[in-house]
Image (cartoon, rainbow, N blue to C red; front, side, top):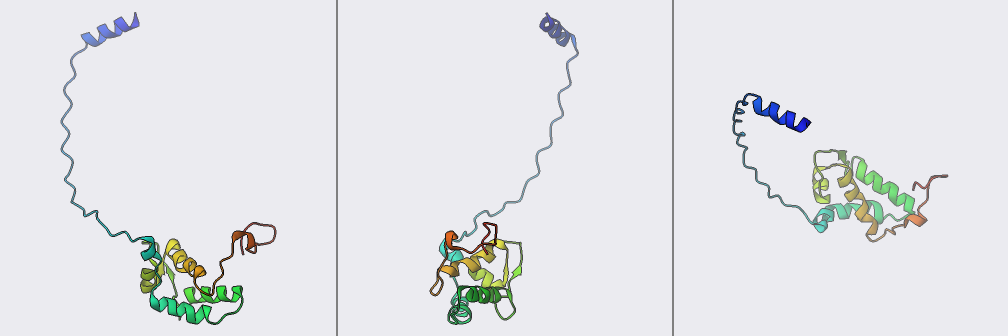
Length: 139
């Protein structure tokens, strides 16, 4: 019954005016979308000068694992080494980070982690990592 009353009310109402035509959307500039995306080997490739610095300042001096980690951190962070500065404008390859001396968190990780598998480093598994007392957080 309600449907019949609603249909009659709609039929008796005046016709609506047609909607105004929308203006055409603005023309956007053409953008070149093709960009070189480096492969993993290119991303992690350590430049010869950086490899030599690592060998001289960290690996060749020997010492305990902790000593080498401290020297690696000093080489990456301090003046006279890489002296990396945080810069979140883009993610760089290891070579670009070496050249620019700037890195975001991912670039910084790439500059630090590949060296663990280089000669003179013995990567530790999570099982053998030392942890803060009472936690599962590696030291």
